[in-house]
Length: 392
Image (tube, rainbow, N blue to C red; front, side):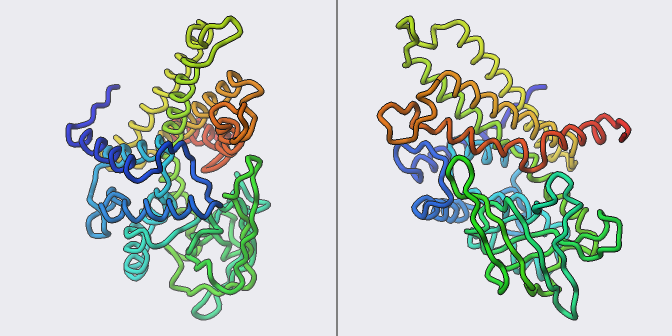
């Protein structure tokens, strides 16, 4: 399999790189800390600049504010944004709930929400996981009871990224407790400023605040905020995950870390006084990681190709997510091995290697094999949908 971008696609890549060089601070190494007000201001500024150029939702149809860009053009955008660890790419709005609303949303929902996403004026978050419902998402217990023209929502969501920054949340709720667990679920759009919504921060082991627990205590949600049919939320919710799983972000993050590691090996000396890059064991391992990254990248390109043919390749998307996740993890693990004890020092220490970011990235990326569907779930989807193996 050989992928080749058009001359116009490569021209766009160059324009995007120039844009990021202008927008990002000098010596930017990222990633942005979503709890830091200065980094969040940068996120908002870049998001608005992307929207002004039409790039934020360029993969959307023109009718919804997009540019009808091909999936291949869009994968270039996602790849460059992730490689540069650039903030401003609101995947919850542009790649998840936006496309879902285009397919399942009412005319009023499309009119109300899609233009705000396209203009970069609304920040979304995703309410799926719960304290007792992770991989077995259909076991969720957050309840929504329809009373007249409104739902009354009670329950909790957890590991909710960006809930402390979000204006809106799209969430799965149980609307028929007596139905089989996959059939009694609905999707709602909820204003995060609604009375009864409480956001509790969760500080992860890298010391960053990205995750949150969100409590819903008799939260009133207009009935018109139901996405799709009542009790058909499982189908709607799974379409969101297919969009989330088909990205190249994991590979691009790993590629950036690999490039930084190669540069480190060129300048860092080993115990023999020679550069690490001259060590054949190091060179062999870096080559293996490079090949793993390239294989994962081709899988993501394959997903985009299938999407360009009008297909929704759930099994290929799972393969892409799995391969990219593992490639990124392996790069970070080997990086920490080469950095040794210096690699766990915090940024600011005169002895810290690569500003301590490899350790922080690895700690944060412990979630990589869990978010958007665990590694075990991805393997099951590949077996069932791709290989058509029986469920046991």
